[in-house]
Amino acid sequence: MEKQSLDLPLDFPEFQEGWVWLVGGGPGDAGLLTLYGLHALRSADVIVYDALVSEDILKMARTGAELEFAGKRGGKPSPKQADISMRLVQLARQGKRVLRLKGGDPFVFGRGGEEALTLVEHKVPFRIVPGISSGIGGLAYAGIPVTHRECNSAVTFVTGHSASGRVPENLDWKGIATGSPVIVLYMAIKYIDNIATLLMEYGRSPDEPVGIVTSASTTEQKVYETTLGTCARDVVEKGIQPPSLVVIGDVVRMRAGLDWLGALQEGRVLVSDPLNRDYPHAESA
Image (cartoon, rainbow, N blue to C red; front, side, top):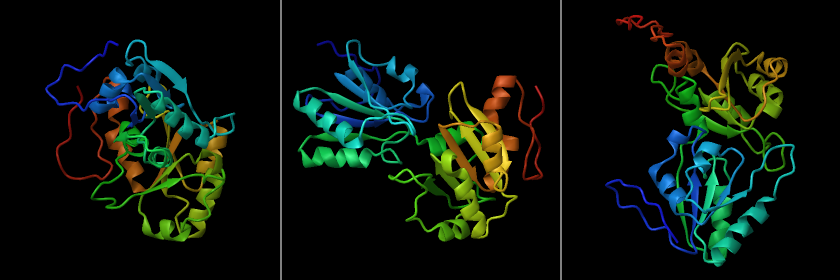
């Protein structure tokens, strides 16, 4: 069987038969895939991929590789997680090189840990290839840094729903509200009203900036700036749908000076500084 390799001065690990590689595909833009991820795509016999993996990434697969969809989307018929995990075991036992391709990072709200533990249970060898999590890379494409030393030195990543499909009840929402200057919410659009209410009940200001990024880092990306007190209403009025990220905190204000993607698309140079610091700005082109 022909294998395509990368012509780079790196010693790539061999993707052996009977192994499973759990690979993070990044937030959406195919260019954000790691080199190890690309190596896996060029080597795998079968690729079991999620709903948020872009077509551009799948196009980089080895010629002849089998593609199996295993996406899970809220409110739609989806394969059970246990079935997906056992499918990986079954394929590996057939002697195939199995690539489990997930959006973002497999260990950040991606159930990669559950799948890896199933492989351990069934004595299937595996490798983890981290990816750029959407909560970092997607916000960077929106011009919103998750940390900035003049705004925050800590950030909390939270899932917007638990395994039961409801707002997580086992989280210390008071601690999150009072202790985290920046909160990044994954998969939270359905329950944004409940979450915003909880955070305000525990002291967050209704006027606190909120950014919502849909289809992050893709050509369909949109960014909405709102506040904690109005974000739930804005989600409904603007018809905002998943996949979306929500970021809460003063770093959202940084977008006024860091919307590099918008500037690139509009052919302009960024000149604004939301912190109003005293240094020379770039001039318009």
